[in-house]
Length: 472
Image 1 (cartoon, rainbow, N blue to C red):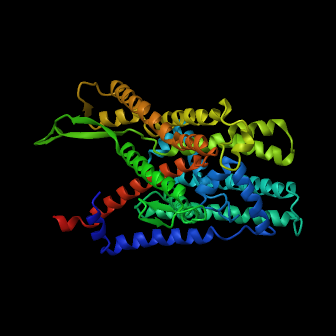
Image 2 (cartoon, helix red, strand yellow; image 1 turned 90 degrees about the vertical axis):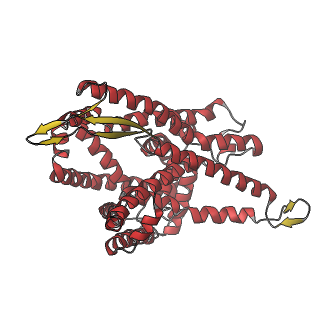
Image 3 (cartoon, rainbow, N blue to C red; image 1 turned 180 degrees about the vertical axis):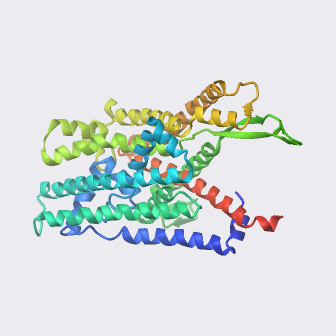
């Protein structure tokens, strides 16, 4: 990464314009995240939302990727998730139906059609999710015996759902506009900013606890006292060191790749000779990136969401209570209630299933985005071959075996990194009797590191393009 080239490219008007457009869209997005849904008293619903976040791991995940939109009960509550879901559905259908796969390979026109279908599918998904969230939150308010100033009418429901769907579609549009600037994927960048936007609140809470000296201050070798809480000082220091180490290994894992050398045969056409050169095919250790962790978190949290919905509609339902117990990660506020006798075998159910899902989704998503048959066919058409491997089917088999071996290590490494917050919780349960509830932070850290590296890579590539003439 050449930061000198990136800074030099800022003198280019086109480059500066692209960066300013991206920054402007992200600033507007953060303003929209504070506009409440027009549904009665927002403060009343915010209390229900807070309970929802505390009781459901899916609520925490949704609040994370919506940039706090769930906490503020904003019009961006649904966020970019309908568009992501629609993209996944379209990718799966495209791979399953040969005609759609041909269309996806039919140049720019084919890709535009598929993009348009993705947008169309995202609209009904946004409507369904908006209705589900509002209904569940409204039922939570009613179940908590909170007095409402009015009873929502059909027109109120329609207005609220319309506002949330509009917010989701605006985010989808912003994501595509950011992608068009060529300095990062729009959807990933929006999720990245959503996570980063939660840092000031976290740091403020941590700072308040750190500088609370009511229980004493830190003595530095008996010379003088630092105005910090001694317990939180060592906790913060330990976490800072641990985070740096984890980020270092995340960067290494994200950048690790296997280089496959591609040879091109010599071809004589008239008086000209083509080919006879070597190229490389980089195979990433974790080709799926952070997508498996996002899929696993969302998938594993749905049963807890269903259990909470059942409990909201029918309090005391045993099936709903079982779903919430099994599929809710313990945090500082729920651990003593869920496990009055301390850690039991049940506590390991959620982490174990989470690990298995991360590994499974890593293999699944890699098989979608890395088509060995297609790569082998393209190499054969271009006269390329891997030394010692026949073109065609044998090349596809060789690439399949290689990517599977990489996936084995990459999936296990990704699963272990996703498990780090649970291990941290276990340590603090033994020390303090309560976990820190950082289960979702592992996902956030993975997303932040992966997206930051990818955006920097694209920014560096464009910077090289606009400053190319200066290096001639």
